[in-house]
Length: 144
Image 1 (cartoon, rainbow, N blue to C red):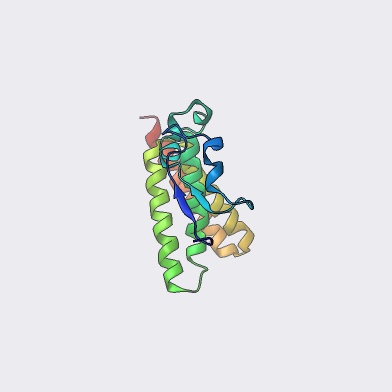
Image 2 (cartoon, one colour; image 1 turned 90 degrees about the vertical axis):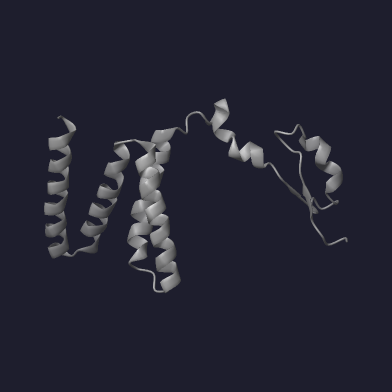
């Protein structure tokens, strides 16, 4: 089977090192797919990744809400609309479970910028009023 690939388990969390895997590859460096699932699944436990906490997760989920939420209205294929809508819903959930308030500002800022760039003054005026209302709501209920 000279043109086949072999899945190589045991790397990373199971103790395998890069030098142990050399014999799985051909002279061109092909022939194997190295698996490190536990190294990826449990990466958050490593000190090197400690800086990627809930706040980064929340803000990046918020960026996905903005990007895929806007893109949902502009893709032509129905399956892409559904796909982008599902990603947007999952990202909203991710924003919620992150517990970071700063993440809430990202979609508002992204959508406001999109509306400003779209040059629709009617949409801009209505959106400005909506943003003021939402902002006022958060201000009123965040100090009680």
